[in-house]
Image 1 (cartoon, rainbow, N blue to C red):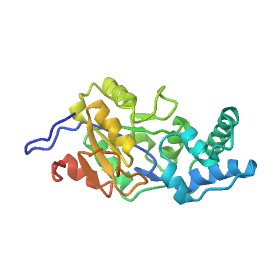
Image 2: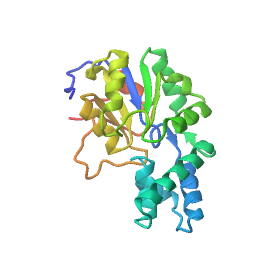
Image 3: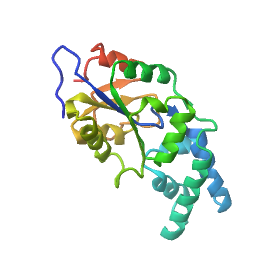
Length: 231
């Protein structure tokens, strides 16, 4: 894991972002697609607060929690497929970028940083969302749950990013709202930044990020060495 720098800011040359709860607020669209599937099955619907607590570990986890043991494994996978199909068809109805995201990504690109987004939702949905919101072209790589055989917190996405950009772990930062994102960074030996205004929490995880930010523009202050590493 990268150590704490003495005075100068770390030489970060690449950043991998989580999507949901980090770059975008997508709870309404996720909840709508999930409830479409639950209604078809005659199952109780879920509200956005429930989605907030259960999102982040992939579609199978989300649907499994939503049906609460009422479906066998075969039926569960059918419901997951139905959910993904509906979400793929309606990926960005009410989803919006968090304040300052487009400008922050533009500034990172201006500085020549390699950027990627790595989500635990299918890559086709990730790509549709970032394109619809106008900043898909900022990313060198757009990865989702079907891009690798494992999900975050496994560091597969970060290892792929390092390999394809020829960057060392000490030059890479992972930004995300969940314990899975911070753990992903730590598992790869990279820097981690917890976005505290998102959906996730680190409470009870035993994980400490290198930085915490409440708005995306604060990321620029990290790059400039104006926010100290958490001791």
